[in-house]
Image 1 (cartoon, rainbow, N blue to C red):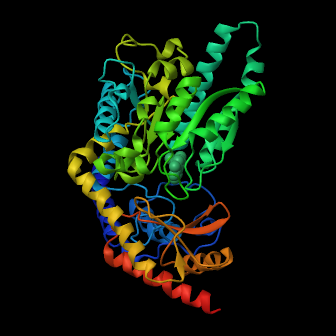
Image 2: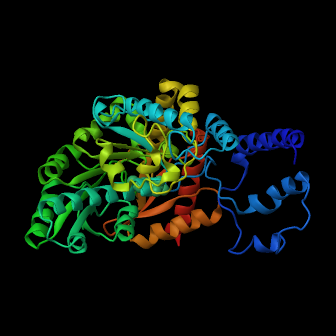
Length: 475
Ligand code: PLP
């Protein structure tokens, strides 16, 4: 393909993308294919001779689309949203064209510099205290990671390294492996599974603390676990608090947890993967109260802030913690400006990194702060409307109040009723939702995900849910 052929193909592809998204409402949200469907649709080997663009293009509908779950369908209500917007797509096109690998400042100065400034823009937009910002006098700063899971692992590894260094400095006799085996981190029974995974990957025990009746991690429970572990010779070092949990979007009390962590010198990592986007609206900022006591904070603009995957924003109060944990400095990566600008390779697990800040820049400029706030408020209102619609039907109950764009509901009675209901709905392919367990209670999660979802879609989804409920209850 030469540049003129690319121009024609790109126009065709852009038209396809626009038509796909504009008409996504007409596609079944869940595909009907079975595992292995794709192999028989394409040859076993790489073609020996290059093919025409037209033959490749035609295979998008034949091979790919039958197996796509349409995350941007207005009837997609599973998991949490994943961002999508025209300016976000444009930014990814440009990023692909520049195609730099911005591991250090010199590897592509604009890639690093735009990221530093965008992380400050974003931090200010959500009301993050200035100690986390690169423009403040301290050592704060933000970086774009791939995912919230990665951010959690990076936080845990930085905390592990910091703690071990301190312990070695205090008691140089003790073997580092022995010290590491005594480390213990904390999450709650509502934390994302990424917490357990970070522990597995880092070889660190993660103790799960039970939450209170409203699914919040409380200081009393944390404190008593810490004290018990210290008494048993363990070394507590890291706490994961969640703002907007995955099962029910509950919020841990940072104001209460922060002092416990600070007093015991435990690293506090705050995971606000989904709900963090809502902090751009003043009315949700109270959930962040006490955040200045955290060591690291993370949320995914690629979830709810119209930025295409992947873009997970992470801030450190003291960026030295991360740089000193991950710093290796081979000759081939050295450059003349090492101490005057961040080299983001020290802030993450991989070496290579894409030009992801373009997405933040394009999206924040195109929508403006006001446009982004309008978007969040509209999604929250749609969730409230869904709740109002479904709550008139007294066969349903709502174990937790609707929170932001999420409504958890179930059929009254045995869990099996709601399990059957969800299976029927998802099998029909018109609406897609996933379940969660709140203690022993099975609930169905309805998250407002797509930027294409309108009130009429919510009404249609609600009708579909009630129609299947009638069948399940009758049977
Ligand atoms: N934390 C919370 C609260 C989440 O809801 C999720 C995913 O939905 C994650 C972490 C994991 O996110 P990621 O896919 O970015 O690793």
